[in-house]
Image (cartoon, rainbow, N blue to C red; front, side, top):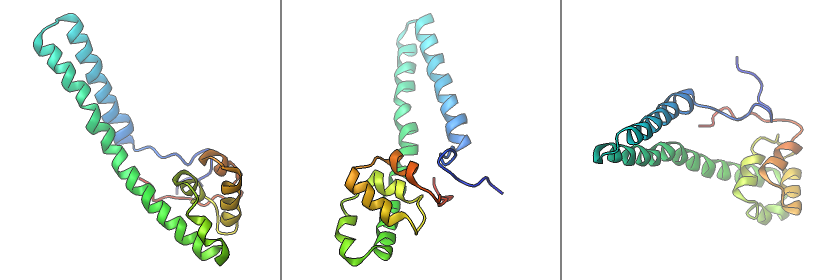
Length: 143
């Protein structure tokens, strides 16, 4: 069974991506730079260009699913706040930023509405909201 999630341990790493793929990319980039330095030629220059260009799909490989995940979280949190907050406060839900919504997903139902109000009143950042959470709600489905 996994450790209970909290502010200090909620970040998620994908070992295959963060440690294997990214490490191989960095090694390749260093090797391409070494080859270009050691033997300057059209082919070693082209290898460096391709190695640098490989950064785009490697970064996009991670950013696209995270963006979709953030959109889903925003929708889930709006629905949760609409279910938990008084009707008169529903219009304010749409004033919360994406970062604020993403942080609020970790707050339990008993405190999320109050934290959302504080986030709007004090323009709290993602980190500030997470620091104010008393009862951490795990999100084990993250990408």
